[in-house]
Image 1 (cartoon, rainbow, N blue to C red):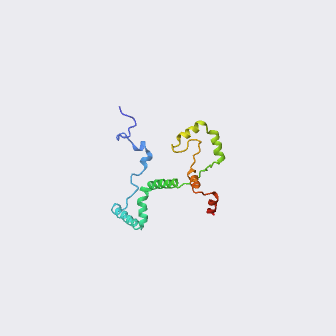
Image 2: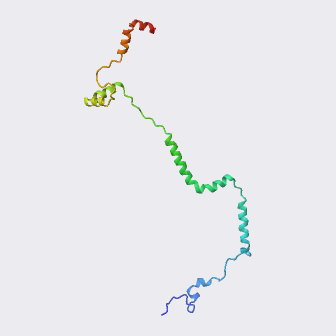
Length: 161
């Protein structure tokens, strides 16, 4: 069985019948390659490359061209971390300080101090400190010295002036 529209079968294919517009076009190549084109092309490319190399680039510009694409992101990260650390370490904060008055301290002690607290405070004192309400007389040796040497208050006042 043979298909009806088999364009690739050259026996039954009629170009004028199947594609009249296409068959009316001349069969010639409209483009031409210039003479010696492929012989001269490498020389033209080399000449243009040599002209581009003649442009002077300073040493600093060469360093920027080499380093910029590779290390730009790394440099920005280091700069941000370094700057953030610097500002974090050198920041100044002001804290409002409350200085209680003696009346505030006394009212707080009177409100919050109980007998239990007083006993805990007495227990926490070192052994050589005073833990009771008894008065310790540290002036007794001085008084004994003044009595033994017959020194009165007027002598002390006269010697100070």
